[in-house]
Image (cartoon, rainbow, N blue to C red):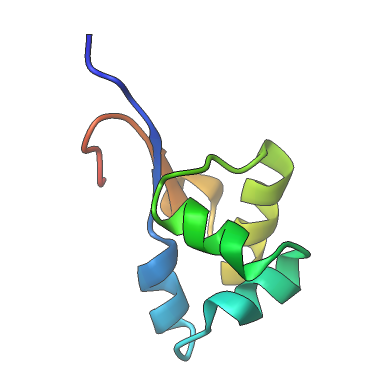
Length: 74
């Protein structure tokens, strides 16, 4: 059985948001820059609360920022 993980489009969304830095995003949601780095790299899955906060920063629904599944980029 293939391992599924939570992926995201955060990097693309940051650049679409006037090239927002990882530090800027981290400050907006109250975490460290390193946490954002790990989430973007899919090495750390955010809590549900943090996922909603990140989605809210971009003004996008949760499913447009995060996805679940093996290679599911849709």
